[in-house]
Image 1 (spheres, rainbow, N blue to C red):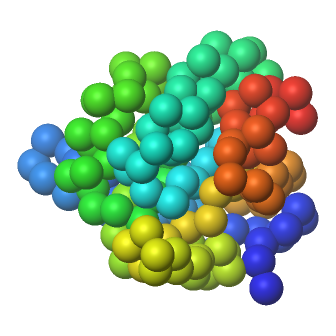
Image 2: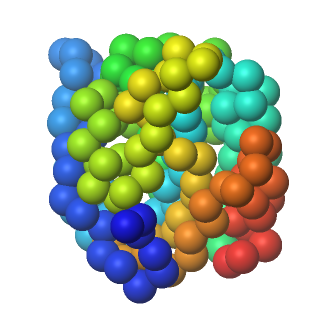
Length: 161
């Protein structure tokens, strides 16, 4: 069963690249007492993720901040080195989006949002979604149902807030 509105996020450890290499980021610490938008993609540098999903949040950052969002986080089942490079390549890092790796898929699996797409070589990936979390509790949840990112994109989150 997957996460839904009203649920508390499960504790998990994500990763980012810090000054001395990979650093753990606790989901609990990330969201405690804060309003955080988390969006997830199946894979860094994959077509829709790279050309549509991340850019939708880059475009929406000012509006999201205007709605009281403290932080916007992109999560993917990739390693922290890939997420760092991808954030730089897309302008996400410069826009203020935090790029976090769910390297082993722990967070994704706890949310009930993992999937495999063997025909295109993806195993153990995250379904595409966006959510707004306040103090660790899901307040808005947009699971993507199609192949694009209309439901889970940045503009849809702005409209929901």
